Image (cartoon, rainbow, N blue to C red; front, side):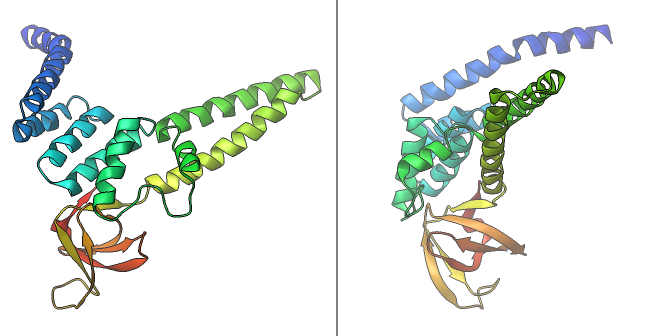
Amino acid sequence: MKRWLMLGTVLALFSPIFAQEDLRQAEELYRQGKFSAALTSYENCLKNYPKDPFVYYNIGNCYFKMGSKGLAAANYYRAFRLAPRDADIRHNLELTLAAGGERLVPAGVPVVLHKLFFGLSYNELKGLVYILFWLTCLLAWIGLLRRKLSYWTLVACIGLTLCAGWLYARGRLEQENLAVIASPSAEIRSGPGTNFPASASAAQGHLVTIQDEKDAWYQVILPSQGLRGWIEKDTVEKI
C-alpha cells in the first residue's frame, strides 16, 4: 500500500511537467503545419487544462487551418466565454462567425457596449458580486454600530445592485444552449424528420440556440434571422 501511495505522490508532483510537455509538443506540431496531429495533442491537453481558454483557442486555430470553420467557431466561442477580454480570441471568433453570415455583436448594439458587457468573465463577475455583497454587509454593520450609515455604504449598495443585475443578465446568456453549424450547410425543417419540408438553410459557422430535441434532431432558433425549426444533430456542434 505504501508503495502505491508513493507512486501516486510522484505522479501528482510530475503531472504538471507532463502537461506542459504536451502543450509544447502540440505547439511544435502546429508550427510544423501538422494541424491534425496538433489538434489531437491539444484535445489531450484539455484533460489537464479543462478551463484554459487558450487551449480552446488553439484547437479553434487547428480546425480553422483544416477548413472546419464551424468547429473553429465553437472552440473560439468556448475560449471567449472564459477570456472575453482577449483581443485575439474575439477577433478570430468574429472572423469565423462572419464567414457563416453571423455576427458576434447583435445588430443595433454598439461594439463598445458589447465589450463592456463582456468585460469580465462570468466567474470573475460572480466573484465581484460576492465581494461587493460582503463589503456592503460589513459597511452596513459598522453603520449600525455607529447608528449612522456612511456614504460608502450607499455606494457599495448601488454597486452591488448594478453588478447583481449584470450577473443575472450574463447568467441568462450562459444558460442558453448554444450550438454552431459544423457541416458545410444544414437544412432547417418544419419537423424532426427528412419527411418534413425544409424552410431554410444555415451556413457553416452560424449560431443557433437549441430549444428541444427528439431522436436525431434538435429544435433550434436562429437568433439573427428569427427562424425556428428542426435540424439534424450531427450537423451542429454544441458549445
